[in-house]
Image: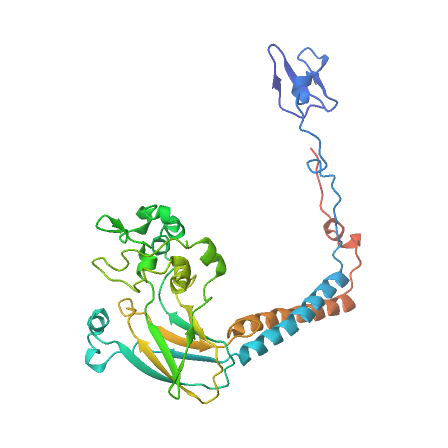
Length: 369
């Protein structure tokens, strides 16, 4: 019985049969040439290519499904309770100051105020500690509606320049409008470094100054692998348009941790970055006097600036989402386990029961041509 298309030879057309022979136009049977049935260079044998490796093929039984959901619930529920409890123990003080630190006489001329070089921008705020805050107390600045993940902004930098003094003129084309002052390269170049946050904070309690520790606020991998110890700032904020912070030209980039923290772009438009930490405990109901140098221009794009003081837990800062997520998954797992157990108890179905096959429940005719 012929079942394949015709094969064309020099003089004869063959029909290929199931037994590997062919039928010519004259009716005789002739073998198909070996070159047309078998590869001359078969691939090398391996158990992987021939799918002969040992494999596990578990049978998913109702008991296994119920046990799996129960186990997930048992594991996730305590973790969720622990994470939520730890988050509730974190003490956090959040203070928005961008509007409050504008003098009333500049309320209608905010951009003129923030862009003025000679104007004193010192602002004093007072914060009350709601609960005992155990050291270290971390200090963050928070910006809103600032898109550090915007592609053009994020790529406006030279990683080679940041890492090595020999490459201070490399990849300047990536830095956009912040490349050179005259013929001299700007180090570090690019919009990211140019727009570095430059508000400053100082703290005191009952007239006693609280020292802000800025050591080890950046990732060690960034300090050691991405910022060179022989690279020093050059021509920082000396162009026609001044951006953010001016870097100290006597300190190598690998030791300027404020810059390193800023240069790691945030994923979301609202973000916090670590400013420093206070290494003493703060007692409940104490009043903290904060002097802020309100230098950073977030007014041009309508963003907000916030100062955040926070303790931490084993799960990080204040974040209820993690605990709620674990509790939700654990709760749903318990519900699914109970529902499946009830179904398995009262509507049991034996494994391998052929009565549930479609052709046994609803016969269908098959036609073979």
